[in-house]
Image (tube, rainbow, N blue to C red; front, side, top):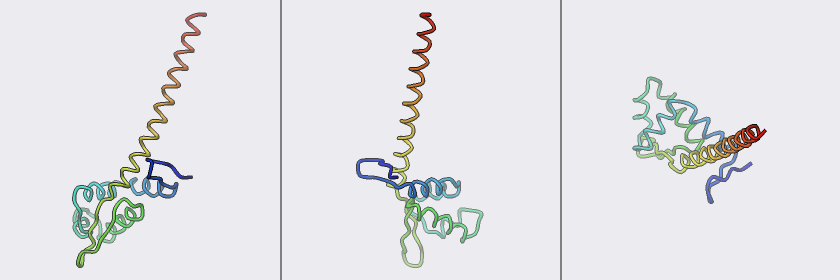
Length: 122
């Protein structure tokens, strides 16, 4: 299945799963927040957390596979950049789910209102 987000953007189920699995971890969400504000090296990111460099590298790799961040070599360092387009796609998907739920709630309200009117006239 492919979910249409905007006229040009579509995500497969596997891509959606990868994005939300990557964002399910607090450390990864924090990494994303940091690199969306300003690119950072993996070394700089690692210094921000009470975990090993290798653990931070693994978090970065999960985010990179999900397309949420990209890495580029600059000299001896790996520079991490946020991918706002992927975040925007995830936001668009969540908005679609919100719209579906708001529609369902409106339908329930209509049904309850109709049911209440029927009982009032009985």
